[in-house]
Image (cartoon, rainbow, N blue to C red):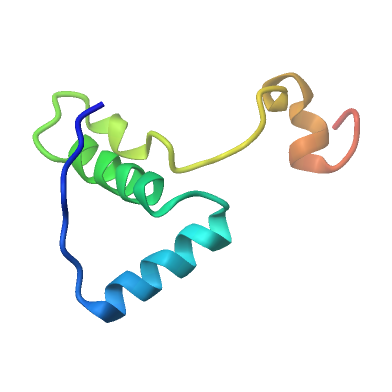
Length: 75
């Protein structure tokens, strides 16, 4: 990992800290996620990558899709 320094105005810093706290991540992780989303959209030869990381879930969601989507074991 490469370490870097970024400057924010006070209002953006406070809002970012609050957003990170509400998501249960560090400010650094929030910044990494946001930057990853922006970079995925810019100049990509794979435009579908702009949606990478947009939806969060658990590892077992694909095996229990009916329960996750419909709230029951089967449609």
